[in-house]
Length: 199
Image (cartoon, rainbow, N blue to C red; front, side):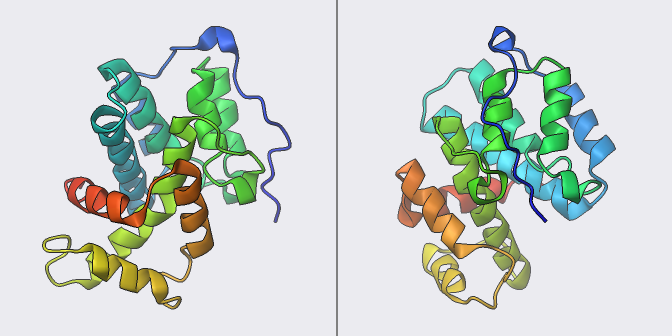
């Protein structure tokens, strides 16, 4: 099944800065995503994007929300329309005149699947957080203490175990880190601490 989007331009530049408000974004998430595990994943990635934008990129609140919104909605169509994954949420956001940078970040969060290369910092960090967040959360579920006391070395060990969270693509994780110019030593502790707070 090909999910290629067959385009590299998304949204209209005149909509730059247009966003859903928090209530609208969460309504879209709740309407489209019924799977609670997927909802949690999207909220975790959204929170990671916001924290990174604030702490590492030094962005203001409005831009932090743009990053968070991209993370929050990146898998919005996966639950009900897996064969239209990415194209359906992109079309929805384009119809709502949303900032093209947000739409493009969503379009590029899986370049091997959608055929769109991550270019901006927002693009690259969404790609970097997506798969790795899923693996870290899966690791938390197998630990009696969950996220508490989780360490980088444990995550690295699980990354090497191909049978653990087998649906998480290790090559994509390393590709994403290379593109973003970050390493596991930087990213994993950042992620453990911040996504553990999302329920």
